Length: 160
Image (cartoon, rainbow, N blue to C red; front, side, top):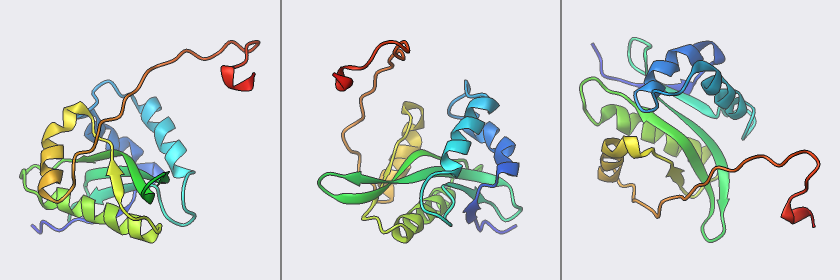
């Protein structure tokens, strides 16, 4: 059996196949949340270029995926942002990681970007180490905070 991988659009009809892959990292994700995320990314970005990309093994099975959008850095310019980058290779080789990263690099070039940035979960430390072996560098981490939506009658501090 060949170990070749191909990357291509993750069609809406194949979203259900991606859920077990996503749950290897985020077991709390249900199909509705995944479908909402996928719908958002399916409508975003560069016309003609899918923003949900799957990595398929020689038998057509889903081995990885990424979601992407073009973003702008104040200092460095356009880059491809990947809020989801996940790959599973049962042989534990770098081939699948390399193939998915190559697809992301190709997409970045197609979009006129100078580079790419991946957002990995703390649960993806091993993948992060593998990506650093392939030339990615660890940047300062993001910080986040959950907020409650404003009641309809109130306005934000920005509106004042």
